[in-house]
Image 1 (cartoon, rainbow, N blue to C red):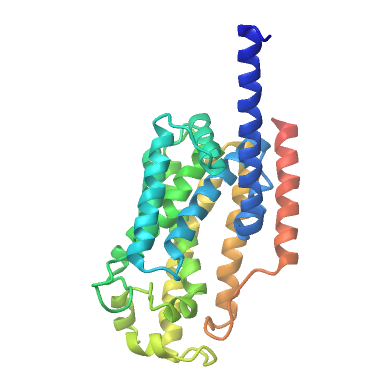
Image 2 (cartoon, rainbow, N blue to C red):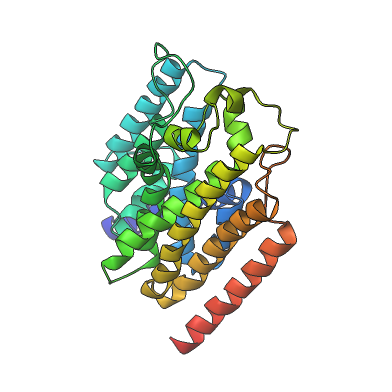
Amino acid sequence: MIDKDGGLTSTRTRDRLQLANAYAVCRAIAKREAKNFYYAFVALPEPRRNAICAIYAFMRQADDLADDESLPREERRRRLDNWLADWRGVCHGGDSSDPVFVAVRDATERFHIPLSLLEELVAGTTMDLKPATQEGPDTYATFDDLYQYCYLVASVVGLVCIRIFGYTDPRAEKLAEETGIAFQLTNILRDVAEDAARNRVYLPLDDLAAHGVQLDALLERTSAAPPTANELALLAAIADRAEDFYKSAQLLLPLIDRESRPALWVLVTIYHGLLKRIEKSGYDVFSSRASVPMAQKLSIMAVGLARMAWARLVA
């Protein structure tokens, strides 16, 4: 027979085991799927690494629901809405068998992450799920329009991450927002051909017009053909814009808690390295998909781990 105190202890033990398992599931998802992000996660102390992996797994679930092209967009949106309703129920004290929800609920409480930011994360995934009655490719008329998309899918991630990383200077929030824009512009450049094949063009239409690039030509071009002079000028202009936003990343680094700084440095270094590889290729994002070589990523991660060890020694 278990007394009241013993029952309470048993419940706490079970909850701790459930939470540990939930974080283990999220770490496995991050390791399998996160690619560039995961190399930065490794350079974080364990509690912060667990929280970042949980947020990543949450994002991955939303993205997978939104990007399942085997289903009509209306069905994807319905499933995403149902998933979001389940998450909101967990936020209001409901139980969940989903280990990702269990881990994210703990992470948001532990690191004081506003639930409104997670709502914005999900809102970003739904921007690609316009109603089927709206014909034509997914496009953005101006950079201001694209900025709002980048804010929801990337800047909000940065705003969540800095709460896990730790900061006290309020300037960190705008800098994290702009760092997210730099990352997403890099992704957009890398994925121009892949997105066009999916009937999506994230390069602003006014930029296309300014550089004499026709939307239909971009959608219908062959992937083997190198960029035309006009396309090269267009892609270089987007890269220049991204480079300007990477300046914010350098200003953000010293505002982050010392023990988290190496992780952010790893992430910025890998993403900026990806942009540099695109630039050095002559912006040929059509014949192959740019990536940072594994050896280079491992080298950057090793430096990040060394910096983390040093930060702990001098703390």
